[in-house]
Amino acid sequence: MTYSSASRIYPKATTKAINELSLEIGDGEFIVLVGPSGCGKTTSLRMLAGLEQVDEGDILIDGQSVVHLAPRERDIAMVLQNFALYPHMNVADNLGFALRIAKLPKPEIKARVAEVAKILELEDYMDRKPAQLSGGQRQRVAMGRAIVRQPRVFLMDEPLSNLDAKLRVATRSEIASLQRRLGVTTVYVTHDQVEAMTMGDRVAVIKDGVLQQVDVPSVLYESPVNAFVAGFIGSPAMNLIEGTIGPDGVTVGSTILPLPRQFERAVGSGRVTVGVRPESVALGGEGKGIPAVVNLVEELGAEAYLYAQLEHTARRSALAAAPDFIVRVDPKSAPRVGSRIELHVKRQSMLLFDIESGARISV
Amino acid sequence: MGYAIDLALTSFTGHFTGAANFVGALHNPNFVPAVENVATFLGIWLTALVVFVVGLSLILHSFHRRVAAAFRFVLYLPAALAGSASVMLWLFMLQPGKSPWSFVLSRLGYHSLGESLAPAHLPVIFALIAFWSGAGAWIVVMYGALATIPDEVLESARLDGAGAWRTAVSVKLPLIKRWVAYMVVGAFAAGSQLFVEPQLVTEATGSVVNATWSPNQLAFYLSFRLDNFNYAAAIWIDLLVAALICAALVLLRTRLFEVGH
Image 1 (spheres, helix red, strand yellow):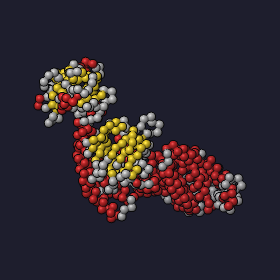
Image 2: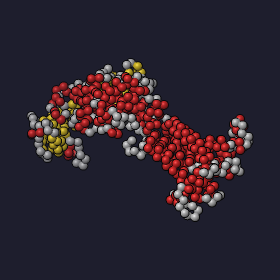
Image 3: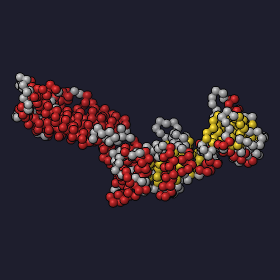
């Protein structure tokens, strides 16, 4: 599938909901569209489904433009956020509805519905109406409705958002496993970057209707193209702090941090945004670290996260709370709340971003 | 209602008579024809109501919101007229020589009001009047019921390949079934008590139409022409029981009040 500079402008809107989106999705790929609420990821999905018109550009499936085709002519199946099951039909009828519309022979409908019910463990619930099902069961029926159609493409619009946290984690892996088994091209929308990183072959990050970056999860994590992607991908998020490039390195507060080796001769001077992952900071090391005070220690069992207030940002913004600097620590040796620490940033893990545009500075 | 029951079970002097008033009303030579007239009227009216009100509502629901709102307003306007005013208007429309549709009435062979209002035509004419004045309000109710269907369910049907017709029949109609049942119950109760329209036609046409055309007219005649309130009360109780039986059948069949259904 290909989005070719596709745009969507809502009537009377001054900005585009989707702004010239260009994205190629390979056959059998599981791609995740991720971004904050209102960024346009659902709109992108709906444009592909035919539920939103494409005002500019094109969308192609198997090389054929589909922008003028009705949803039923695109051979796609979609799982909606609230499942959208037919409340007056039982599970069997919900699963078979699309097949009856397609006028498939009754024996084939029966066989397909039975097969999908078996895959999704719905056999015991076939006579129940949606109101008599749990959230997880409804979600499986919604998935089953898509699978039974054997479409070219699956579209999923935040299908896990209405499930509780434990069920969400369990279902996440089931969906990924099912997609691998069926091999159907899947476009999955979520605002949860953990879902995106764990499920997708590739992840496309969208902000304000504009595609920021699309790549495999590891590249997004290690080489974000801008500060937004850097701050959005990763849990906890990357620390982004202001610094000033100088002859000796980058100055953060009163601390001078040595620049990564590749920047030593290449980058000029001026203010930058410094990006540091929580796992790239140590509490001890050579030289002077960035002074901070521990606000909170979050113990998660195998690891802990320390939330610290950098001293120079605390002085500057006494009235407004500055964002905490997050550090991953060993829970056995985590400092206490209120204690003063020094943060040593691993030199080669530091990323630099243009302070105006947010674009990553690279050489 | 209690007083009507009391009157239906007692005589003019207040003595308990059991079912005698009901038997007497039943044997009144005008009772069975009146029931037949209203039954015919109800058959035409309820069918037209369900088919056209539900059909028009489904059509309006597929229009753009503002267009649908404009049409709903236009269709609702006749309901703003009092029932008696609607009858007057229709009497004018059915008057050959004066009606703007005179050419149609002439083609049909009607050259006088009496011919237009022949007994065989009355169920249809009263159904037309009732539909014209009542359908708009029911369309507003049905449209409101359709508006409660989540957009996602309708989008789901689109994605599944359902066109407008299939969505209407397989998704929308089943989901507003309760409201259609509610409309049938309400319309049956109102229609079985038909009085204003035939009474006005009787008065306006100098008894061209029988003064006991409907059971309610018969009860009125018995009460205020013959001073027989007991027989009249029996007829009214009969109408009440008929409406309750219809309501019960419809409610049980459609499980109208079942929660979560």
